[in-house]
Length: 513
Figure 1 (cartoon, rainbow, N blue to C red):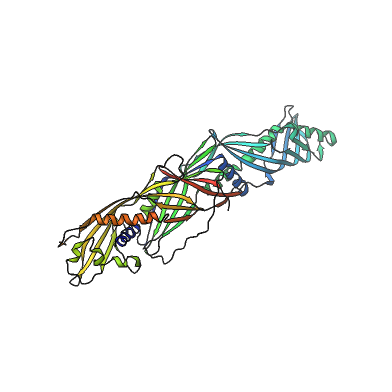
Figure 2 (tube, rainbow, N blue to C red):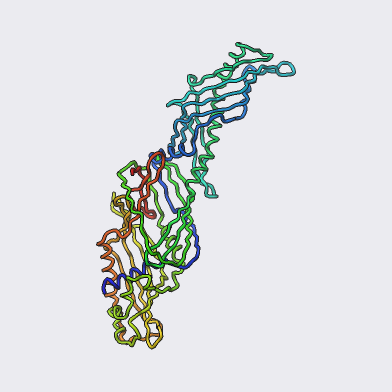
């Protein structure tokens, strides 16, 4: 009897967020906090390079027009450039994010170079063909861009250009050609040498061209990163034998970004859409594949705001004030307890009234919405602790007398359940602790006058707490597979869940299968 009634009550509480077919949506600000360390930024840089930053081969660019000190004009036409990227580095500073493009080689090809100068009322000049400029790379050649990351009013990631640094060392700069020259100003070897010298002198302007072209790649890269932050995740929520089959769609978007020395912190907003419907899950078998995550390089952490969880509970709770009947056919574990003989220890009055049958009917409603609150752990603790507060879950009982079903009694249960989230064998384990606070209140249905006006609230409370203790002694009651992702040329996993009010945080680490 003891565990049976407790099972009945706790199963009742597990159904408090079920509902009929409908769609709800609401937005949560500051839903997620993504804190990336320098190691995390290194992984992001590798991911960007592998996905978005490809070598440039034969990209056409605008003509170069340069006035020389002696009045000559140098024009390079039919330009193409190629870049062999070696590595992309991201560095977080208090001034912004520094993006270093490290290159092996930069090639600039001009189909034609024209040299001219004013003479009386017109310009005279010569034309040379096929000139190549090589900028040799290596460990020292880097184009550095300083960006100030921002989030627009429309909720998109953007970046303000603060500075661009790119200097070409004289020893790394090589001019080959032109192949031939012709024109009034000269031709042959002399003209080829003159044009080559002019292009050598134009090293700084060539550097400006390279800066302009490489910087032009940044908007697309920022757009791609923004797309990575705008993600939707679909979660199926259900439990066998419970009228609880809902889909949650969580859509994230950046709301703020801050660059600090050695780390970047993104704050995300989220929209939660819930597709609610009645339905029973016949069978549920979670993926039990175990991924062991050894201590790895800390990439940063992800923090989930408690408000997201509470808003999700709210989204899954649209019919909270409406009653729905518990059907023993769908919950056979409760069948033995939905009868007057079993429940008479809680309501002795059931032994005194004339009933047509021992069968009773039970209805559930939940005027009070469950909420979640983080609980601060001890220093250095690698466990996230939190409390689930269920303020008011109502159970209504009907009995059959003289051929009619009538309202008989009500039970209101309030719970504060201390839980913890830990990592065990590559899984997130949710565990109940033995400090639960239970409050049980009973009352009679409107219009019913009992023969024995007694509700054994203390017994009911003991019964509920006894079941919670059984759950506690059994260890984790919920296990979730820890996802591991291919990212940045390696494996990205999670470890060390913690509470950091208002966030539940978990570390991002390098992982192995």
